[in-house]
Image 1 (cartoon, helix red, strand yellow):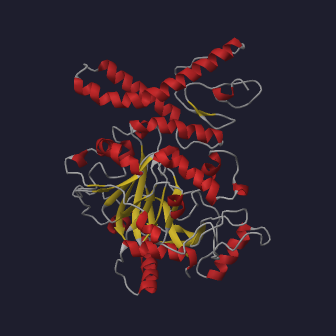
Image 2 (tube, rainbow, N blue to C red; image 1 turned 180 degrees about the vertical axis):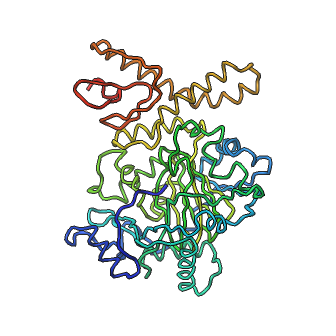
Image 3 (spheres, rainbow, N blue to C red; image 1 turned 30 degrees about the horizontal axis):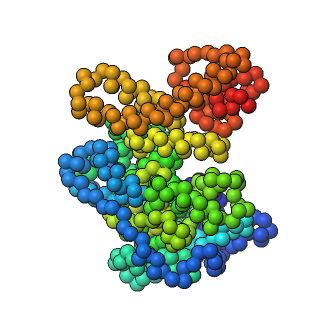
Length: 485
């Protein structure tokens, strides 16, 4: 999901006013570069674009109508192959009979949304030249944004026709390196859905309707007590020519699923989750200047990447042997990103997409890694990982105990058990060890079986569900990781 808003601007109706607003917002008496001024960035060589042909396509799956019945089961089935690429494309066997534009006009009507302004250039990623997306200050209805975006496309290409995806890819990287366009607008993180509620719409009434996706029976996010915007509830993303989404990984290393409702294609770049550490190393050593890193070691780049504003060409990854795969997403197609898979991309013109997160049982081990990294960086978690792990483990254990031990039941549960058991056992061993140590030091233990809530650690912001520490020396609770400090 997109990063938080950075700066509020007055207007984009006049480019000079936009620039003055950005300069004033960034401050520093002229120490920062003009955020829209293009200049040659030596670390990113885009003098040649033949590297585009070196990026292979991600796998494409076309499920049958029967396979399409249960999304989580189907995604678990293709995961052993698809996860090796970080992203995959799924072509739906059923289509929406009610156009997204009609749904949005009915549900959003005259409701207006604010766009972000994205500088169409590369940054040095130094203290004086970082990259940021700004709030435009302009508000659009869906139809007003569509009209503006199509007008910009025709102005550039003298045609409203769709152009070849490879040509658009070359155009994007040429434009971002040395073109004349200064900025584009992108409407992201808009609460709502373009899936139809009509009983006659096959896709809308299917389980692939993203409004209900995260709460499906086999999704771990069904265990959350409250909705989390952008995680459990889908958001809309409305783009124009060269609108982009920066390199990022999903919150808590969750899966994401994106449906392309209408408009021009999108080009995606994906990195396998197994290559995430290599990706971060390249970014740390060859993209970011050391002076902008807030910490040392493996988490240094991750901390900056969480801002979701990092744009750079994939050729630097190819040069350092980090695998990159491409997807060209068209209307009616889903793109799925797998846990810890970094991804980025851009639009070929006006379009509307919708995305939401989800998690299967296979996610828990990587979710533990993400939670640990958040705690090291003192980042507030988006969801209570420890609570989800404990609740799912309890449910699986109860189902196993109550089952009649038929072979099919055991087969179905074995894989989930293997993915939940390891992180759960590790958590319980750690908790037991620390509590035993604290009791030897004279600490008293209180058991409260009637409390079912998560508490955030006052030091590292870790989510505590099983146990936490209260001490006379602090007003807030702390996690067991700080019990012997």
